[in-house]
Length: 387
Image (cartoon, rainbow, N blue to C red; front, side, top):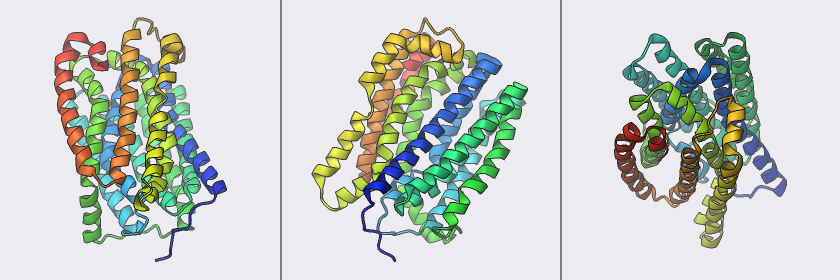
């Protein structure tokens, strides 16, 4: 196997940061833009349905990604080939789609409701699929190439969704058109640059695929529970309240979403560097990267902005009156900061190969949040969901 130990140049690190940031921001903005358009063009009810469908997609995206990225990006010894990682990802994304379909039918509702949940949630299947390519580019020192492809794929599909929604004001039709556009954009933008750098054929040996799945199982289960912690309020609103409340909650959740975005943009490109420092015994350098990630939660700044201008700004963007929800907003923002810090520490523990410790923490937190949803949401409504 060719050596990959030479560190990247400063200019390459700059390009990696630029395009990884652009891709991360575009992926995140895609959801925000789509949410704003749906709420403005089709109302709070449709906005609530969209928010629920995205929550389902994000929840099952953890199954699609199976948290292999954290392991793959730090697999500098090339224990597994990209073909093995690709075969694993095709398996997990297929399971993700099955899970989404199963949830949609179990949750009930009209035929259109079920189809909206399935189609919108499956937007996230493309994020899960392309992530295995993004990670391989990162492992080979060319994160910028993967970031550029992902950025333009997300930009293209968001533009298609926007045009379709503005033209039809129909969420179901817009989702169907966007799924077709996602297939075309992924094939046209992601596969060509990958073929020029590494073999893109899956290797279906059952033993190495099973080894990847077994190795990453604690990471996947921990992240699945982590996403459940973030999405449990939405599921509780779906069970106890209605899509209009879901629409309002989606609006108030945007600042917390921004905190997590800032944190990931700063921290994700450092995964391979963090692994290198840990394996080389550079504990001080490793700790410095963790502290940088914690500082990137930027809670004080976002919290202050939300306290002063948060509600008027959100109301202007979404075109809805949210002036009576300052308490809910500040509670959600605080939770977003704590969650972002938890994700940073999760990545650190995963690099240290302490997956079981992470999992134990998330099991305890999931049990707590489930009980709190049952106790607080029926009684206190959206404030209970925020808490």
